[in-house]
Length: 112
Length: 117
Image (cartoon, rainbow over all chains, first blue to last red; front, side):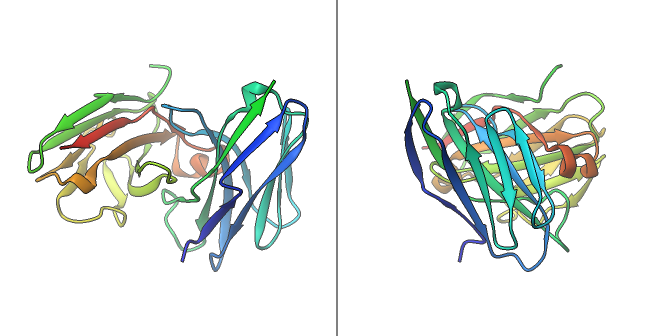
């Protein structure tokens, strides 16, 4: 059973059409939840770390929120340059600080 | 350099051969991480170094995989007797410390695409 599940697998939006990506997790204790962006042929690029339910973080058109079982990445008025795969990862309490458990990602396409 | 450098960017090898993948982290970063990403999947943890020592190697799939970081900077991931199932993109990342990696994220390289034929 996957510990981190992301939905949808793929999302196509028109420029300016806001939406949300979902990340649900089932680890027993959460040390942190991470959002990364990955462009084709590149390594993931860090966006946010969230630690506790109710926490929110924002960066430009992106806002990440966290509950006890899931996180949302809200994209407001997206632009074509926001097209990428968005990866969610969790770090477990009791696990090493180097070990992130990633989901499979959501591939976002924004059309002009 | 300004970022994490991985060489080679692409490697094609025959089944059964030995390969080495190199990672040059950002200067001064003490924590270094290796992940593996198969097509359509998220990165999968392999091993993490704090300085010269492996702090967690629980993700190495079997004893054909080994990694070293002898001087606390450059790291090499070594794969013996390669199999077709080892084909993937091998990603290296670094952070100033492992604590900083948690709060401010890792900096990933672009990866080495390994193809075993």
